[in-house]
Length: 486
DNA sequence: ATAGGGTTAG
Image (cartoon, rainbow, N blue to C red; front, top):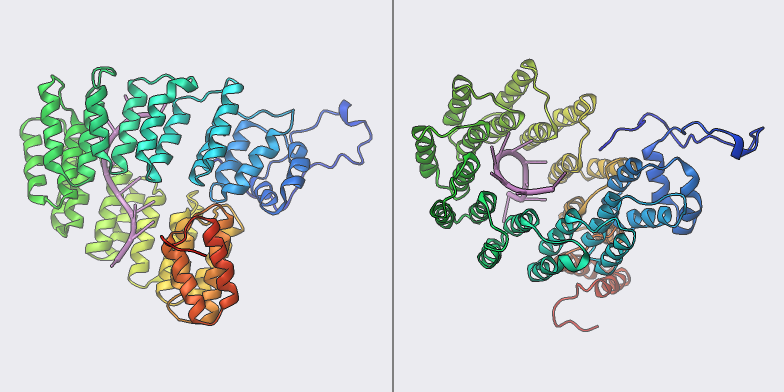
């Protein structure tokens, strides 16, 4: 996410009302752009005001629009309002990328009507839809459990002006595999392997798909099939299988496979080592993990930030946070730049042993390192505060998110709502209900389970009136229990 | 904008 003038406080847009020369003769200086204040304006203002005010607010550029859309990622309805408000103005036309963002947001809200309307607009303006657009649409359909619909969409892409090719085919296979639909992917693969002239990448994607489902034997079959068809496996193929063994809990097989890779003089790279360090570590073999880490440098393979992250996580989980911090310091000394994952791993480790204050210290330290805490950072600290019964502190962080550059996501709401059940207090359940309403407002669709438990809680604590309101929301959202009648 | 490693829900 780009970092445009973060320091500005409050809107500071040039005021032309008292300008001596008429506006049209004046060369306007580029106004200072403050993403946070624009975002907050969008969050607060209603759609009509937005349509009036927004277009002339600043000099809009595609990059700025993308930045704002990303900021509003976790407030889908507002993001789309923003998109439409700008679109209604003649002096600005959205880029293809902005359309892709908007389509992604609509899809995430399962607003398929808006999604396809945007696709049609895109086409009318000759901006697409392109392969990227379809990658997004396919991923969202698969993610919401509509793999069959996704297959239909893929097969009809060309009718929207976007012909399928090997790349789009492979990326669809990958989407299916990552969503644990390797079987569907493989069936599709069998039908179209000749048409698209599948390659090594296709095979790697499928092997990985079966590994994700912990079906290493099937992944090995894919590997065999690949060789039979005259395609040579590469390091990525081997790394996929190696990771697969760890995923399936087959550490013995993983070790054997690693030795075999060495014996066959296959090029062993930093990913191989990171997989090994992580795999053995989380399996509880910390010594082996450390040894592999030390071994790699001797083997001429330099650790990456990801390798350090793996080791740090292992030490946090299976050893001692203090040792993890030693490695963190070492990594700094060697000139590595920790990333969000590094911090999140370490902060989680500290939270886990109850050192909340130090965790928060690291959270502040990230900001100094130009490594802004992300939703995951907030969510994990909020979760641990809740576990400790420190609800006030949890909500303090939650408020901070809402007011700034990191809006709460679905997980944040689920964490807080769950926490509102532990004290069995009537007030807490009302808070849970309010959180539920807010999350729906922001375009998230709570699970049936969430509705039901809040409803039950409210009824048990005598909040019948509020319960009725929640029930209305539930019926409108299509999340009523099966066979339920109002 | 096609494939592999590191965060996550017990």
